[in-house]
Image 1 (cartoon, rainbow, N blue to C red):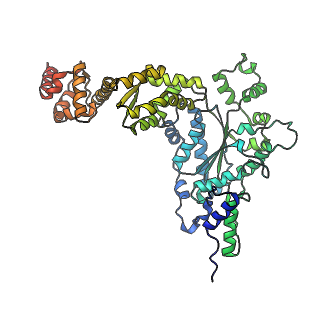
Image 2 (cartoon, rainbow, N blue to C red):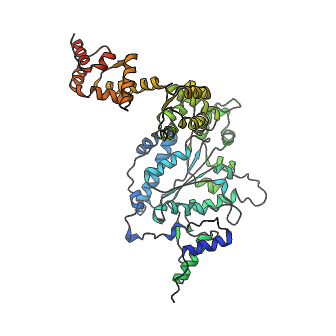
Length: 506
């Protein structure tokens, strides 16, 4: 009878017998078929159809990350240089290119990771992020830095060619800086730096780790079926490495090198402006004094500094960023059929509270979660269908929650007013007409809209849809006053338009 070999189920059973029934094995993506050069057009080729300018990348980042303009410009330029080299790497004029690995400096929560994630997403290359503190020198307890490169292959769906164009992002790199006088073996400092150094230059990384059980079992299966084990590797020559950290204390090293008096720093405490100025003068020797090996610091030629976020920055993030955390909370409440609206003063109050957390943009998540946790729990069981997060609610969340539960229509009038504001803005932009609504009109519109299960602004658009000619006629008149929509205008819009047009010719 022909030997059918070992199946993935056999591997699963074998490992569970050894390690327990709760262990699940996910075979390394290299088991997937890797496309050969003849079978491509590949994702790599699509990624290398790189036609971005630095300004294009910055504009994309502006949609998601607030401020950090200097950091965006430096990053965008370095990224363009790197991927243009990949496009033209076979040309004679590009063969002497030195890879521009990047070091990002900045406190927690200022958007360092978010910047790189959005760049990778824009270009279409795999992205891997990890903390440097989880790794140790090969042969010691801890992760192996080569796993970062293997993870790129996993993120690329097993496509080695695409993974070789990917981005590896290593955070908390400052934590593996080691004092020059370290005694004994330093397995998590200089040892990790030396291992990373190999990856940042050019090396071949085996796709199967010698310490990974699943990988070794795959090799055993391959040997049983083919009689040999094919050694598969990934080349790191074109993988871009970006490291980041807060680098607490680095400014003191820079000060000492250039002299505080020389640059006009006389106080003991460094201000944010002074810190930014100091980081703009950082050199490789400062990183060496901080605890990096000279070769390691030399492989990170591009230095990017992200500045701390102010209250204004945090406010802009939640109000204008496409990645605003408030969108997540709006979706959370909509899952229960509840609309939540955030006023400007409410968003400002959230930003002020987040600033006190001193964790950058991460503080926004902390504040919102504390603020709205009880609302998420209580409101789905209530008759509340909408509420407004204003400054009063941010400062007295439980008091406002109790009021809302007692009166589910507490914010109805405010929400209707807010929605009609959107209509006013739309009419101003489309027709140049300034509208205003009386309180009685707002009440009638709200009641009628509720009957028809429409938003107030949608109800008004339906009310006006038969009067496009009148709107166009009014738009051509130079009106020096607002058109006031009262109860009569809501009940009989035709007569109201005739009156507005007559008045416009007086």
